[in-house]
Length: 192
Image (cartoon, rainbow, N blue to C red; front, side, top):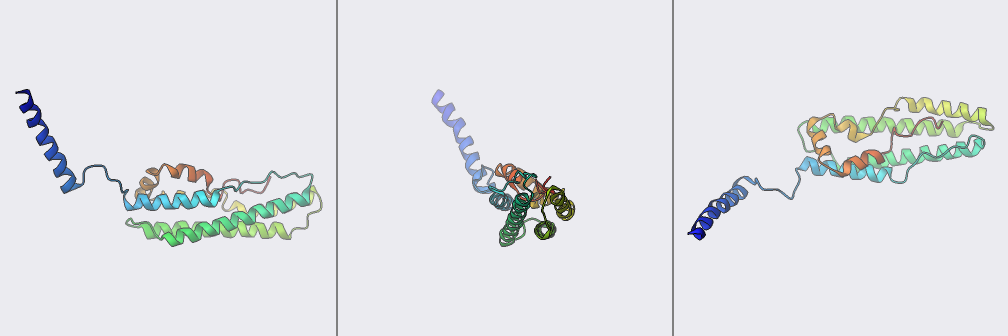
């Protein structure tokens, strides 16, 4: 009699599970929603573009060397932002309602940040630096271009303003690491 109860109780559970999986897909899916997969790609691009990019330690007692270090850093940062822009452009807009508009705004901000970094690098590169005073003046002049994007946190932050995309980024554990690695804004000050 015990066998009958066990067999009888297991049959409805198995049938329910089979119907649930076949009809509604209510079991756990191995495929994330398309927007979550898309966000994972953005986060990979952010990680790649921010890898091994650090603000140099500037020794102001060696002003000419400090100038070269900052120009090199700003040039590399601009290149990374350009590579990020290209990679995101290849991926295209996120697959959510209103995704194209959010994507366009995020890319526009990324373009402005890259242009500001390029202007700062050019300004600093052209400056005549001979001593600490001229270095400070050059860094201040370059910093003027960067102040406009000083609070810029990157395209993922801009895309998170859309609730669907925020959820997509939040569901990706790799995105937290990517946020910390992303170039732009972070450490891109006037070099002081």
